[in-house]
Image 1 (cartoon, rainbow, N blue to C red):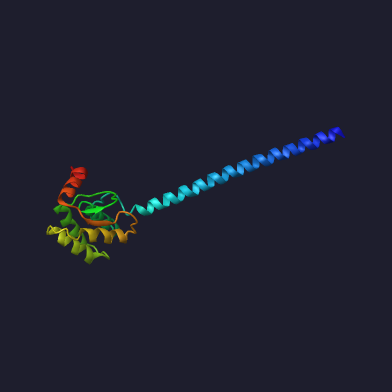
Image 2: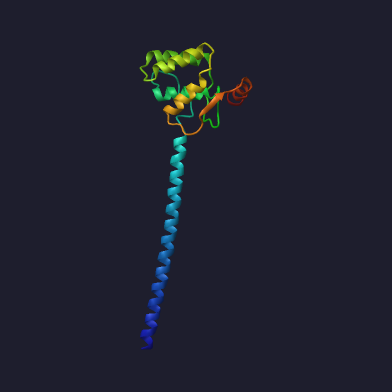
Length: 165
């Protein structure tokens, strides 16, 4: 009888230890699971905010329209104020001329908009830069970094010195 009692106590104790270990493992797995889900959500949200490319795509006959739009978007950063900007590309006369040639050769859905914007830029008129930036920003589903105004001449010069010189 004593032997049976000891066996029952040992068996109950083993069951309790096993149940405790199982619950601990379950809690740890659940905690890591929630942490992973939170990380995955934050990663997917950060990708949504990264509108387009941060790198200027070479201008050639193989450029896709979304790449062309991204290039112009990067160029507008030299002219506009936005809380956040990712990437930049210097506005040059040569670049504008080349982009106008590409628009003439390609059949882009946004051809009229792009042609009009670049035509004004070629004449040295960048008053449309906020509208151009935000049009492309909206086309690319932007969530952060909407342009609110043109940079002052001083702000633009600082931007140029910081990013291109």
